[in-house]
Length: 57
Image 1 (cartoon, one colour):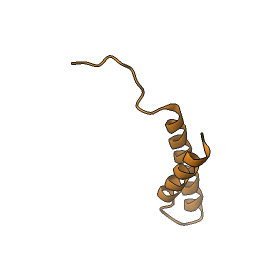
Image 2: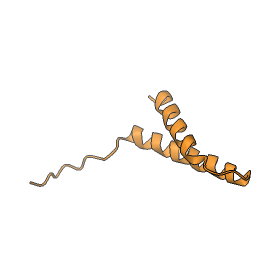
Image 3: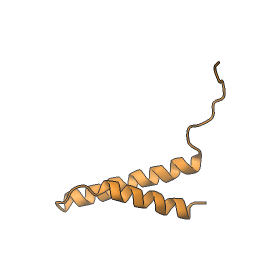
């Protein structure tokens, strides 16, 4: 049976939080690579998602 509902996979709040998390990870990763380091994007993503989840209502 096919479901014709067009419900989004994520709501707007979750999409915004993940977008900010990705942008933060890209920024942290780029700054880290420019400084000669590696592997900073994952931790920055997790921290940013937690942070933005707490402040965006």
